[in-house]
Image 1 (spheres, rainbow, N blue to C red):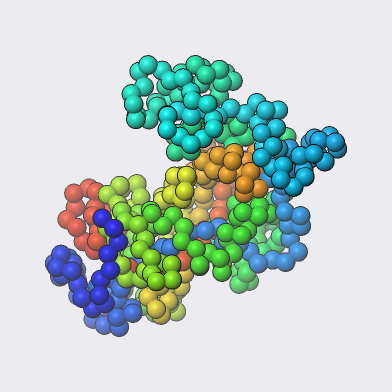
Image 2: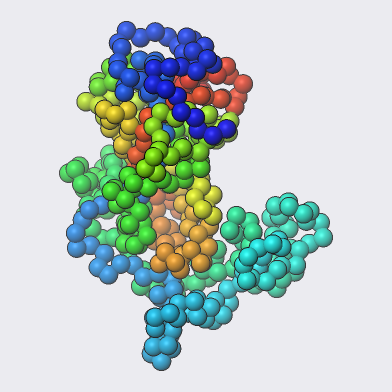
Length: 431
């Protein structure tokens, strides 16, 4: 079901039933402050973009981090650099890198427009079925991939062996990669300390924890997409957006106790006449409980702050389908007068889920975006600062700041556990 518009002040028939089940509150607010259909104790939003919040510090990252392809070019002899570094030679340089380093890429199914060869498949792999881990290993073996190597890529259309699927095999492509050495970064103080690795926020707060930005803050692709002006004008993961609802609001400016739910939408974002997110559209929630988190929060001078909670955020954009998993995430966001929201998720991004999004770029996407997969992998592993595994003694997550922007929305909640539907579940119901 696609996102649907609802006239302000009018409530769909099934929502009239739901709202009647919610407790009455004493304070009435205007239509702009009641985007969930008129209930004065609730606000809801659809996020049009969730992005790595860029820091506006001048004079940092000069030059920018080198991408994997640029590092490979720098490793060639002066004669070859003159040939392959010339304008119009990029495709030939990519081909040379693949040949020299032994990259492999094979198509699993017919009908693809790719020039990659078609892979031999095991006889027990049914048409249209996704290969199991055992079948992936068998496919790699049948097609002479390096022993123990070969991962699915491009939404499982390809089997690949390259510097993005196996960055540890190509450390030479991390040469020229640089991390962010500035003193300013977006974020919050997550550990209540102010160590040497901490930043100051653009607003002047100290002790900010954002080691992810230290790892990727000099990569041009992340700096560009994290520019606040660019982020506000961009729809990202629009086919699988995230919804936020706030319930139990007595005063939209100051309230010491509200309930905040973060949940995936089952509907795509509808666009307005200028290509942005359409405000006050209606969204059904995803029935997958993994994409739902509920926590307590408070509103002070129109700014929402929540207690820490683990969240799983959908991230589906072009060929990437890699949920963002944040441990101990807090929300800090300004509730806007027009019914919108602007703020961020601040917590510890698991290394596995972060790198999955890099891996799914594929080597082609990494080359196009000037990203060094080995450089990113080395940086996040080195700088990870949270959730240490007791067995390996390695940190499994990295402090981060994901900014977001959103517009007012209506939410039809569809709990996956059989609990009777309500517009927003309370913390007690979610336990």
